[in-house]
Amino acid sequence: MIGTSSALPRQLRIARPRAVRMAALTALMVSLTGAASAETRLAAHYGIKVARITVGKSEMLVTIGDTAFTAAATGQASAILRILASGEGVLRTTGTVIDGKLTPATFALTTTSDKDNDAVKMTIDGGNVTALTAETNTTNEERVPVTDADRKGIVDPLTAMLIRVEGTGDVVAADACKRTLPIFDGRRRFDLALSFKRIERVKAGKGYAGPAVVCAVAFRPIAGHRRDSALLDYLTDGREIELAFAPIAGTRFLAPFRLSIVSMLGNLVIEATDFTAMAVQAAAPAAPTATVGK
Image (cartoon, rainbow, N blue to C red):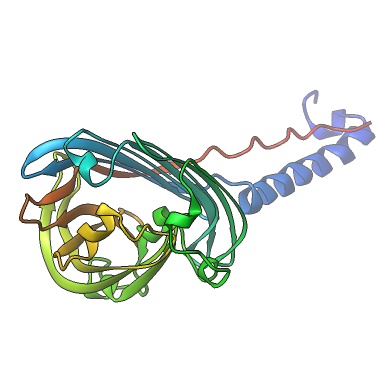
C-alpha cells in the first residue's frame, strides 16, 4: 500500500531510521548541554533618609545564574547628605558562580560630586587584583597609600553585599553575620566586620515581607582613605551601625534590606522600598532540524 515503508525506495527506508536516531541524539545533546538555564533576578530600590527626611535614593539589580552573575548599583544624594558623601555613583560587577559561590571577575565604579570625580576599572582573579585603572581629580598624597598586599584576598563592594549562607538550613540565620568582608573598591581598602544582633521581620512597600537577619557592623579603614575625611570620622566615631539582610528567593544568598547608622544629628537610614526577586528561565538554543541526506 502507498504510505507504508515497503512502498518507499530502499535508500529512504534505511535513511529514515537513521534520521530519527540522529534527531533523538541531537535532542539529547541539547537537553544535556544547551537546555534553558534558570536565573534569579533581584530588583531592590532604596530610600535614603536622615532624621526621617528623604535625602536620596539608590537601587541594586542582581542576576544570579548557574555559572555567572552580575550586579549593578546606582545612588544619588541630595544636598543634606552631601555633608558626608556627595554626588552620584554607579557600580557594576560581573563574575562566575563556582560551587554555588560568587567569584567576581570585573568591577567598575564611577562617582561624580562637587569635589571629587573617580573612575575605576578592576580585574579580579581568585580574589586578587590583576589589573587596575583609577582616574581621579584628587592627589594621592592626601590618602593612605595602598600596597600590593592590600590588593590581595579582596572582594568588590557589590559582591561583598551578596551574603551566601552555607548548608541546607534556614538562610536567615545568625551564621550570615559571622564574617569579615575584606573590601577593595579600586581606591579604598577596608574591612566590614559583621556580628549577629537579632532576627526581625521586615516589609518593603513592594516585594519581600518576612524575616531578616540584622548584623552589627564595625568599619575598619586600612588604606586608600583620606585621614581628614568627614565620612571616615562619621563611620569610626563609635556610632552604632546595623545591616539587615533579606533572602533572595530561590537562592542561598542574602542582600541588603536596610542600613542604619545612629547619629546625634539624626539617624541615617537606607531601606528597601521595593525588594523583589524572581526566577527567570533563559531561552534555550533551538535544536537543529534533522534532514534526510542523499
